[in-house]
Image (cartoon, rainbow, N blue to C red; front, top):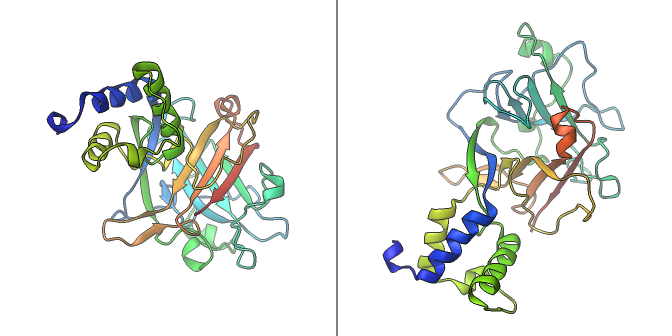
Length: 282
């Protein structure tokens, strides 16, 4: 395909690779696999250390498992822990449909909770966890998970792609200015390149990387963090996505995205007490 692509576009893509390369874990769903109690999954019955209090909201209602990651099975490495289970819980809020989001208290784990189990008790059974009186995503019509299923983490070099339309636009404008002394007002990635060039960019830079850990943040609206926010790292980001047959796996409102951010130094210390959760949609 490169033979039909301008040298300018090829140079821009190579510059994007150099300037935006970031190592991250990309989420890949495995809808045909069976879920297990301790496995990595979207929704389902969570593993739980029965010696601990189960997470609840301010009303004392039990939170629902959004996602669970078995770090040892996924072979994660620093700055993530290399063993144990990391979990993300959110509130089933049928009345307000906020799914644990509190605009006035971002970063306060009331309607959501991030829990880390450094050790896994393999004697815990699914029946024992269910006996706690918990609910799963499939039992609610007000949570973003439409299809509970396993997923896996793929370690790869990611780049800013057209999915990150605001970030990549700024980066390309910088490249055009610095390399070609070209300034474009009201720059639009989709309008600047041809459809064939779009395909080339997608092949070279990759796509479907917006569901990730440690990668680039993605928003359908605005970044909820201030410029001096300590939450500098994507702990987990789950974008709305369908399976190969077009059936919804996860959907945040009107095709939105859910984000969990953490400070990198807290992550290195395995301190998940301060995590910012937000989601937005179109």
